[in-house]
Length: 150
Image (cartoon, rainbow, N blue to C red; front, side):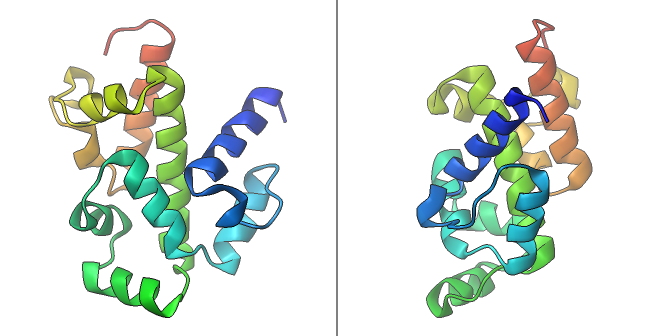
C-alpha cells in the first residue's frame, strides 16, 4: 500500500470525525471494512454532513435511509447497517478526494452544487446516492486534479 493511499484513508477517517468517532485503528481499506461491519455511528454521518454542507434530507437520500430513521438511530446510538456504513465510507472517499483537489470546503461546496459538463450537466451532489454516481464524481475529481478540465 502506498503512502498516498494511507493518507487518503487517514483523511477519510478524519472527515468522519476522527478517533473520537472511529476509535479503531484504521490503516487501510480492510480496516475500514471492519469498521463498517462493526457498525459506524451516526456521529460519523453528521461529521460528513457538516463537511459537505448537506441538509438532513440530502444526507438521508445519499445513505438511502429516511430522515426519521437516521434521527432515531442517532437518539438511540444504534449504528448504521453495513450497507449504510459502506455508503458513508464511500462518501468520505469522495469528500477526501474533493478536499485534496480543491483544498477548501467552500470551493468544494460550490463545485458540488454546480452543473458539471463531464457529468452530463448534472450537479455532483445529485449523483452521490449511487455507487456509479459516486465513482463518476471521484473520476471527474481525479481528472481535475491531473489538469484535465471537466
